[in-house]
Length: 356
Image: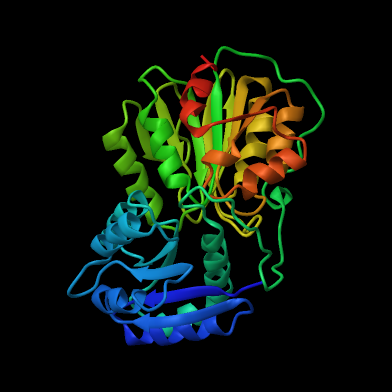
């Protein structure tokens, strides 16, 4: 199998050196260039085109967003954004995701070299995931992470759902889980929903500090209200709550009302927030009053939880393969029997409205 060819574009010499070294040392990855700005990158692209580009967004001569848009027009390529953990960096990164980038690698302003070394497993996994992204809707090739990682299940946050029937109520909940490609997919769905829509709880795999900016951006685009979830927020019609980066989101029922808890805890399926944690809590608290939706993303987070939702009486759907950027999460949920039916991204908003 040919190695994944990677180009690193970052004005920081430290980032270029460390990122190129870590990726180059990983099996099945070849760094073909590490350059200081997009103009130098354009010159190298004339010689050899990479499978994945790791791109900074704040650079001299040409900013990363302009370069990204040019790439997506000329020859769509999976792009991983390398962004600082700041509010400004979060806003810029969201522009990049909207322009077609498929994933985020975060970096602090201080202690950068040590941080990148410590985060090397995540960096390699992100690049492998990006290499599978179907920016032209071409069938992706799934590859396993090179380094085995200890994995927790949702048991570390919530006990499994006991076998019991959930009484049906008039309140409905829609739970959505997604990862790579999910920011664009969620934008398409949520902007299509009218003000009168079921309450939504959402996990989008995204780093801390980025989810607040993501929710604020969607809130400005949508008819419904969208916000980063806070502890004890009510789940109400016409509002979507997005799990904050670095925290798990748990649905709780109090009488006929639903609220959320935002909790700490270990990574589950290598993620915090985890889709499995959210889906298990929805199975326990909402049962047949819920719809579970699993969408584009690499890996299997959410597959076990969606099956629990279906066993609890919830309706469950998966995004279809043709409209996914990466089909890993829906495919795994289907394999495990958690999916009632598949739905194209363009029809997902209408599927959600059937919950009314």
